[in-house]
Image (cartoon, rainbow, N blue to C red; front, side):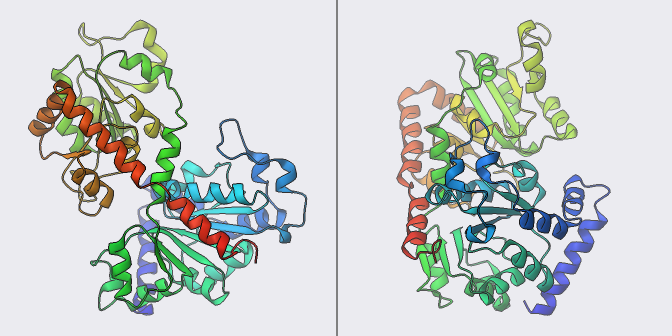
Length: 452
């Protein structure tokens, strides 16, 4: 791609997103969130903002004492770490490293940026960062203004979401920039004849930490060898941290009782159509559905499929009266809020992860596998190495139809030995991949990227 085509792409993206704003909530948030964005950034950065130690609330994983953070010291003396994430999933991927660096240097200043409203809206009040911003759309002028205002001493770019002018400006200013948990495939533009601009973006990174040896081998074909390391995926550290600090959900416990439980997370309509018959015909099973999107229309779609269901918000209010459907109590709970999924899987007997029947592919299987649960998902997994590896090691099971889903569920529930082997394989797979965060943090320490 030439720089001319890149500018055309940026123009089309901006124009398109403005055109669909009246009908698309995410597009509206994207546009409105960037209004006067530089005024907001300047006000916060020049005003000093609020130190993360002052923003901490009960339950935060970061503990910083006021004397360590030195919020009253000259702002220029505080090292600024900027972490950029495309959306919420990438934030969760980079979060363990960010929190590790905060513990290493409590006085540092942390700036978190998102491109997507899905990430920004969910984490705009994240107490581990001093500032959370939308990333202005890429341009030479925007990149220069943003970096001049933020003044990062270290940049963490999580997984992907490459923007040419930002990366070029960081390289020009000789600011250490690390790619965290990158993953590469041969069908990406970097490895195509038209990918020179994309290849140059990779050359802007100080170091690239990739998830697999296959990614490292691909980068070597571009001549990138000296500044590439296989660190693994920091998501493994994140899900292990969540599982080892469990938070009980009394209302979920009450709904599940002593029944077998299937937790279906990040589902789309295609997933729910594979599950509804089993739930409708097995009243002894408790099924918890956490749709990937929770707009009113989506929730109604789920309710149309599952005959004996109740929304979490209604269950929370009416639990004592045990609402029924024609004499039968609900055995399907629809989660109509955001943020519970990673904690829901602890209650599963079997986990189902959605997305595998859609074009984009399966969602995060690690959140379920870490608890030692058999993980079931649809067949579109080829782009998701963790789903492929989980299947290969025996912890994940691919289904192609509702009939196969019913067969797998019954087999696991009625065969304790098979269930135990599958569950053990899931947990072992996740724990064997632990340690990516420590590898990257050690590199930062050894290269003195926070002290130079």
